[in-house]
Length: 173
Image (cartoon, rainbow, N blue to C red; front, side, top):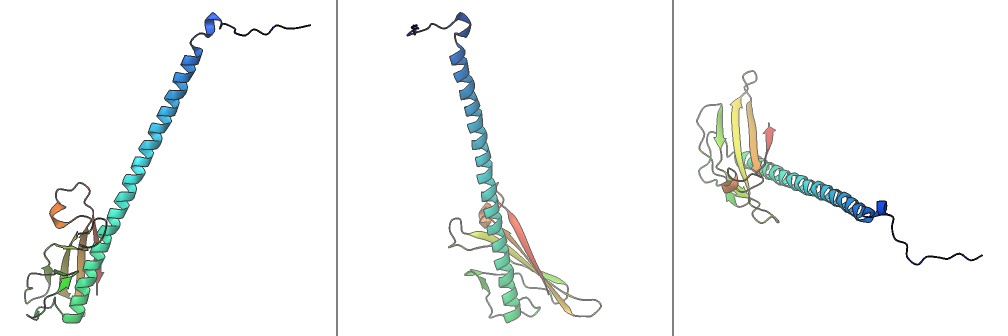
């Protein structure tokens, strides 16, 4: 017995357009999946760049605090009687500060300076240092607090940049 194989069968009237509907459904699912993966990847890139900028701000604050600590220990720069011939610098930038009063407690505030100017990719990060000296009321020992604020942008862009991050380091001794 031989069966005839039809070369072409015409679709039944209820099946017309099913292939087009299935293709539209599959393409919309693939498009939605691709858009959600793209949005997730974009958020990950933003999050990682914020983490990187946060590290730059922390490193700037840490470097400025260590620099102030060096100048305080080595040259007693932040004492009430600062030697006039000492010109402290941090990363080649002058760490100028207003002269202290003769009485404790007092705080010396440095001007905002840009450091790490040769660091890639961004470079030129802003820092500001506050050095507070006071006498302990119980022991009469001299206490020092160095507070350094580091920023992920240069000093001119702190107020205008929407991506400026600030990290602080504080040393007590």
